[in-house]
Length: 417
Ligand SMILES: Cc1cc2nc3c(=O)[nH]c(=O)nc-3n(C[C@H](O)[C@H](O)[C@H](O)COP(=O)(O)OP(=O)(O)OC[C@H]3O[C@@H](n4cnc5c(N)ncnc54)[C@H](O)[C@@H]3O)c2cc1C
Image 1 (cartoon, helix red, strand yellow):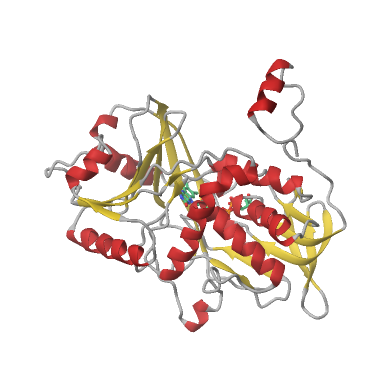
Image 2 (cartoon, protein in one colour):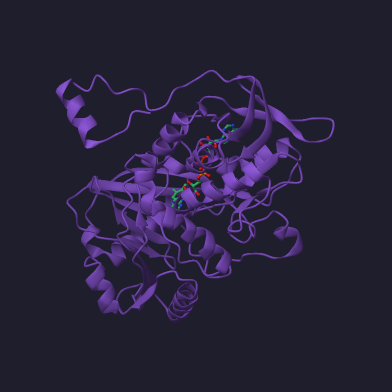
């Protein structure tokens, strides 16, 4: 891999940038691999990277039915935080936040991680109590989170309307200063480049259509639109289509897939210094480095595999944004889009071995898995390589839906994203 550095940029500037090699190659699939990862989103590419880097397993293919990063990884609003309620969640999300911190250096790729602070607004007494409980629980787990009065919230984010007359009055906020954003497609590209440099084959336009099993029931490989490919181990990391893939191996997973939408405004000068989330009115907002306001909405009420969503959902979101930030009332929206999110009953992910030998699954991240990309990939690679969970993902089993040991972030306030 050609290392990116200030010297390389200067050298290429002098010769018309003709010397840059492809960031990753596009090989034909081999007949056999040690490990196949299905899905070239951030979690799948990251898994391949850590398999190679930390476990020395380089005979790996990442198979992607579309283009790399074209799933939820390239469609999300990039919020990163770890202030979840339960110990298990704080463990996995904070593992991620710690990895985000050095990720650009590790990958030699600027993922534009920006810990600018994530502020969650409380609009009623219930919100205040729930957020204060979260703050205490987070601190016990060594995760930073602090309570702000409405005035302190406005000082942190000046466009915020804290008038008591507002339809959604702000009664305070929980602030995680280490939370923030990163550039989503750079995360996919950075992992792809670093994994390819270690020998991983990244194969786009290759849809997995079947999972093959031998006479003993163990996985032997996959059927794809580019032929049969053998593998001793298969990791399914396919977000909204995870249940479709698991069905191919006869494994049922408790997932529902919903469209989730986001939109961006016309670009303006820097006016919005942090990330603000309001779960009660279900709107959240930040500003990208290009200047666009990045706005997220809630999921549709109906399950679907279409990557669009209902107009009324984004209308409601924009109502709430204008109420909370009146200075944006006259802004124009440029684009909106949807992704398909994979939602479990307790809103916590599944990162585990399955009842089928050699088959592993990493799914159920729902509306909030971007923040977990490095941590999830890191512990999932451990699970696949060693055939046993890493302590961080040990609680995130499939069995918990059978034995009732849920990690119920849904009940714990269900703050999405
Ligand atoms: C609008 C929106 C906003 C969001 N906002 C946030 C946020 O602010 N913060 C946050 O933390 N999370 C957020 N999320 C959630 C986050 O995007 C996801 O949880 C995360 O990106 C999932 O990553 P992934 O790599 O698992 O999935 P993906 O990036 O979706 O990758 C899965 C890949 O599998 C491929 N695939 C599927 N079936 C097959 C097959 N049969 N064969 C081969 N390949 C297949 C798909 O094409 C896809 O590329 C948001 C999601 C959406 C849609």
